[in-house]
Length: 127
Image (cartoon, rainbow, N blue to C red; front, side, top):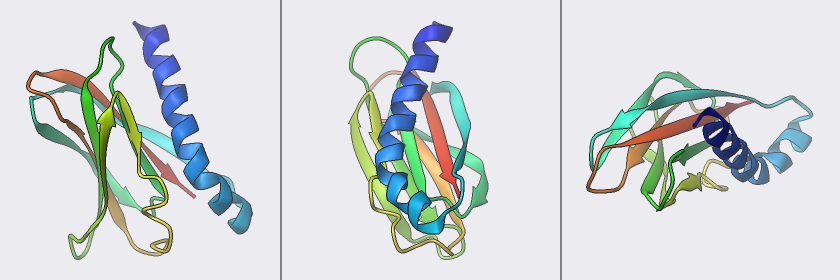
């Protein structure tokens, strides 16, 4: 199970890398990430990251087998305005939704978009 979760997290990193590659090269800075959630989330519910920051990407992934709908969402921490919300099966990233919002403090969320409780992993990327 740990190997499967690590492989899925690597896939999530690749999804985000497609989004953040241009940002990292244009800012000439290193990009780092941290994982959040990683436990069972109730059906059709979300798990928020307890930290906020200058996020440049967010991914949600399901580490189990089979297809489970997952969602990612990023909001501006101060105003609560939604900047990104995407859903898909097993893994989804914010894509280019956060481009242009670099200096806005953001909060990341991942969600379980299914009718059953599942483990959902979140990964937030920061410059």
